[in-house]
Amino acid sequence: MVKESKEVISPKQSSPSGQLSLAERVIEPADRPFTEAARALLKAGFLLSNHPLRPNQAFDLTVAQIDVLRTLAGAEAEGFSCSEIADKTLITKGGITGILDRLEARGLIKRIPSRNDRRSVLVRLSAKGVELYRKFYPELARSNRYLLERAFNPEQMKEFSNLLDLLNRSLETRERKDGEVQG
Image (cartoon, rainbow, N blue to C red; front, side, top):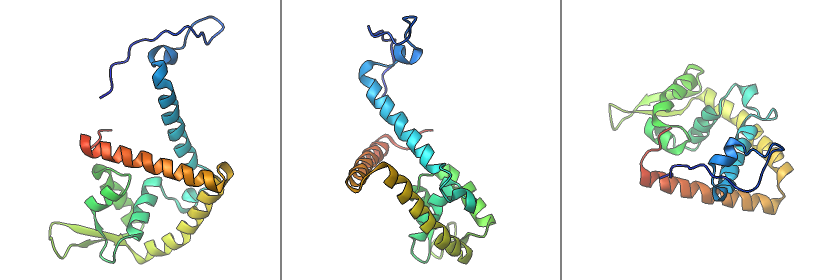
């Protein structure tokens, strides 16, 4: 639970007029490194996913669509249910239907009635989806490598990946304890 913020005035003056910014007044000094780290992480994610060297635009794919395609590429032949896709991706259960509708309209996925449950459908890549994935994903991997190698040496990349994994596991554990995150 986040405690209610109170206005904090520190002796450090950040502007020539001696006035503290609103951001400096409402964030506790001990919270600033965490706020700055979270903002930097969000900014890096935005910059990475929207970088002009990324193949998303050339293939007319959103980040969410890429996530679904990657997930389905890892599925067994029968595919995944919509709930399984939502659990394995960054997409909420409420948002998955629209993404699947758009991928199906492009002929990239197939919805197949489940043999085990008449109320359920399984989703898998279509032949066109497999073909697109085989073209797109190697380009995405090369783009990721190029952009991240510009920032990190191999040892830093390994450490960064480990830290992100630690953060993700911590957040996923917290989410399971708190229930579905509202957003």
